Image (cartoon, rainbow, N blue to C red):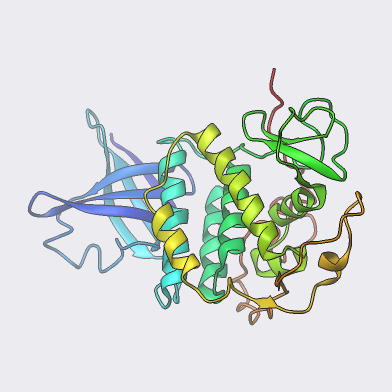
Length: 322
């Protein structure tokens, strides 16, 4: 008897196969990332009525036929429509980049606990927000942390000393370096910036303006995180250049304001003043979702004791080298 799975799933991508079938790549709640063939999907719209498109959240019935290398998608229906993702090019670009992340850096059939509700929550937040470079950066960091690639941002990866003042960042070692351990010639940055990134991983995306990062801060931490991604993941996402072009073409990187936030006004432990320039101010909070529709984004307004809350489930930092 073929084994059958009933699970919620997110459509990552799909393509035509032959004259009547369609290959669908899904991220599922039970099985992780899987590929499945939807027989007759091109000929009959009754079985799959417009549900095999990007960003679709499905209730899917999958069958694992004997002597077959691919699952078969027997039936699917929309479980929850998410509107607004194609209303702006920025939302669409960030959404496509996120789907490619799930598609390319998760293993076939490898389930990651909590990843599906996290992905669903990200799309729900994205449908209400107008994303900027900080949004995209934090989304990358949050996703990597969920998959076990979390940089060490609060203590030196070599000696374990707290990061204060001016510090280095070493992608190969997996995080920050105190001045004593940083190799000669290392470009230093404020420990405050790494601390803001650490808080950003545990903060809802909709509250990113509260991190107090300036545009110069975002430029620097973006370079460091991209270096970290390339070293440890070892691929270049096809959607990355498209995303950079879309976000760079915007006049301002999202909700910016000329007034500094309290955190941005503070000086770091070294006494160096914060960089001049525009700073990310807290955006207006979106309307509260309908009951039962709460976002499951990492840290997004959840009940006390919920295992998805980072305060209740400490994340394991990236392992130290050697």
